[in-house]
Image (tube, rainbow, N blue to C red; front, top):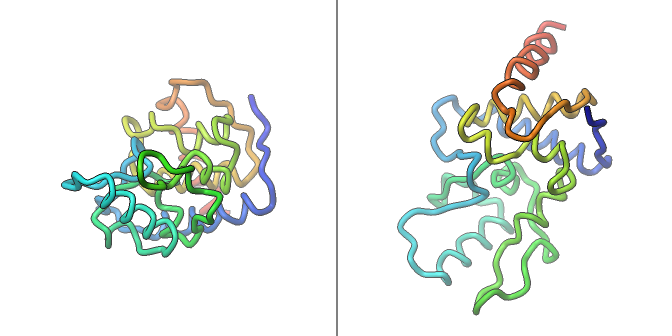
Length: 169
């Protein structure tokens, strides 16, 4: 059992992200919990770095740039934009978005909260923006995250029950 530790700013960012994810259509196809941000058909490192940076800084929307992203990867679309500190030092010839730094806008990278809300294993159990939004709402309600690595499936009934109760009260 882990207590939830989030700053005021992280809570605000999570609320903004959850609201955005809740409002995506049920058949939304540009979502995949296995990847922060991916694009198909781009073979140039430079082109990828440019598309990713533009998206991260300008809130262009994932669907508009032809990319697929996880919950955190949708943060810029939700209005939580990258700042200069969220880009890695130059790797190769191009400066790239550093998603592991950016995630700190929502919670501590690698923390139980991060794993519960954003862990890549959700891609195999509840790979939907609505499921991610429910996990975020559950965490924002200060419920203790009783998450164990690799036990994604057993957590689904927990946050689904919370979601059902919160909608009826």
